[in-house]
Length: 338
Ligand code: PHE
Image 1 (cartoon, rainbow, N blue to C red):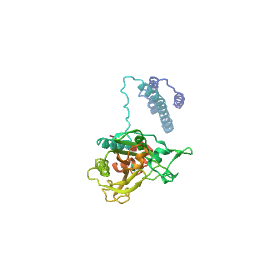
Image 2: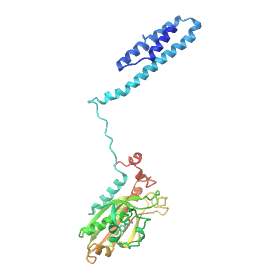
Image 3: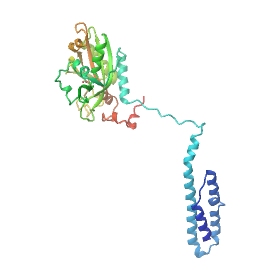
Image 4: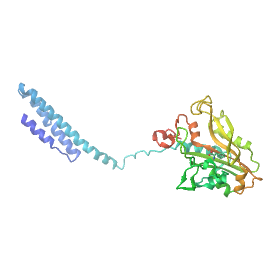
């Protein structure tokens, strides 16, 4: 009996199988109901009582070793097996995983839709710009702090080439090339050398609006912005215009909307004021108009620049940091199906 056990143990150690069929034959040979090891268990009855304990142990070890070996061989086949399945041309194809739109694109498109309904069309401009389009044509004096290294990313030590700090540079491009009436939106990414926090990033997104025609007034600007705020955030939304300064608009204002995360009661996002700033705006400065060849006696216009990231944070509750937009974590991006 001991000899037979040892012999089978050696055999099993050496086992190989070239196919699933061969493996099945081995399983039948050794561990099926009529297999050699099972037969040994039957013979076990005849083993002398004083040897039963030791031989029983050997027999169990043999059975386990055989089972392990067969499992091991089976595993080495399962890889091949999958390949067999893959080459089955009649199998239904794996479903194609569809991506989702980025939340900033969803919000940008929503902004564009809202203004498209009152006649605004779209244009885009380059992110790498020259000083004239970003600053000079927009009435920035040479020593203005926005040109400073603090705010602007300059390229390769050439102070004339910058990453645009605002989409107002596209205003310059369009006004220089088109005659009024102009009623357009300029969406795009902008860059500022700012410390990154949960509310601010070194790049973010704006949608610029520009309307130039005869008799455009500040009342028209306010009405357009009020319409936008109510379409975007709901009819109960309040707006607040605060006097401000931009070199290219006069008068200038910043617009806040009632914080719709806390309903105006005050929360960390609105710094407990109940209001959140979402855009800068104003009447296009006559100097800017004449600089690009539009007669300021005949035409007036308004412009505004919306912060898309800020609006997205208000639109979708629970985005606790602007950084989430740029980490591209699929668990975050997958939340915005549309
Ligand atoms: N360009 C300004 C900014 O980035 C916003 C703005 C746009 C202000 C248009 C007035 C008119 O802050």
